[in-house]
Image (tube, rainbow, N blue to C red; front, side, top):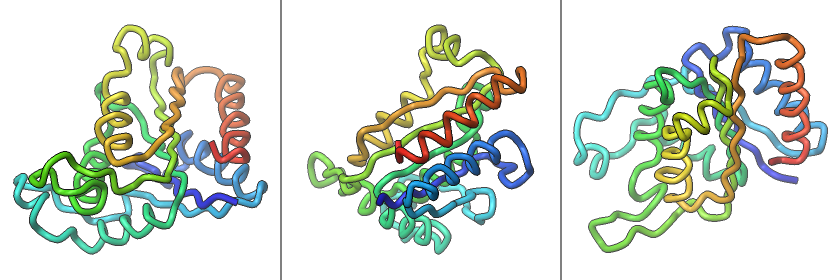
Length: 192
């Protein structure tokens, strides 16, 4: 049995859109296979924007971020789901990452040499929805923002392997959407 944290990064999470359906199907698959699942909707949190590097590095995390850190520490598999907005993750998710993945939690303080990866032993699946075809984003745009999240946040913190699902053409046919819902349920059952 794995402990799975689903981080729903859509600013409208809970608004009964396709991202909610994907989260639900992943969770159903995971729970049916006996995995423990917790949900974390970042749009329900009140997190201030960080104003400086010293605030990020030296100030304590706000209470909502500390609770999110507890969830991340509980989990051994993290599922990130968010829409691609203007070629990147929504600003709300970026704010969450900056508040939660701080020095001393995700990695050791870099002022003392090469940072140590403090979140080893966890794996991740990053699921990104978008209007364009997923292959187009991967080839033409080189999936730059998603690669940055995987390399500069997750792997830098010791989370690996990091697997990726790019779900393009989300406004496409119902058949296409249903195939992805089925695939998400299988990924949840496998905890991948």
